[in-house]
Length: 311
Image 1 (cartoon, rainbow, N blue to C red):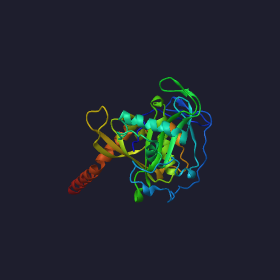
Image 2: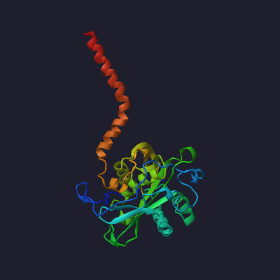
Image 3: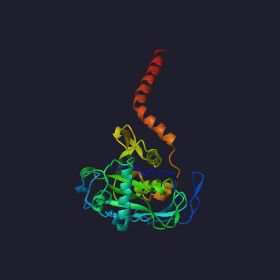
Image 4: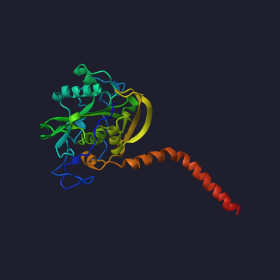
């Protein structure tokens, strides 16, 4: 797994009433998706999760495992440029293009742990399409980050949802995210991250854990912080990345999917202003020092109490 779309920016939710995002982005038009019954779904026991050994291997699939249970697709939204897009299941015609995109990221050597390209479609399918996979697809022509025009139907990014571990820990899911280079900085990564939360929950997973978010990729770190994920692990010198002299630190990020509202609106959540990074850092400092502060405060309180009693 590598939760690293290398993108930032806000996404505009397509909704009826005007909505200011960060003081500058207005949502417009109509947005909707099928409502989900008011209960948390349970993952079925026949979904072949027992066969996998880790987040990095699996049986070649179609990326559609469990999607019969998903009623919210497609998720309709708009990028920060105003371009209308959908989050939908990946289709077979898109597999070769997505494998090429995966290989491009591997060659780049900065965001994912792999250093060997996928040579066959079956090999790629065994990793990326072993369970559920999705794309952000353009619903209208638009302009790329480099100013060039792209057409309706273009894939802007892709991501998967699958178990991070087998057996008794198969309720913990994992995700991998890629945004095309010419669509970065348009909010696609934030849209995919928010959609991941909704889709993973609806697929029946209870927790999400991203194993390797590289500290050298600030866009990725900012994205998961801004979406409310909790950094629960720090692994120093975890990765030897291309063009970086020393091994870089990796973070582990966690999200409790059972805390999501039953009718969680992923595009609307993506369109909200990210959590203030400064407050996140303050929280991390507090969590780090709180265990030692409590005994210290108790000692001070007891000392004051004894001083009062002596008087």
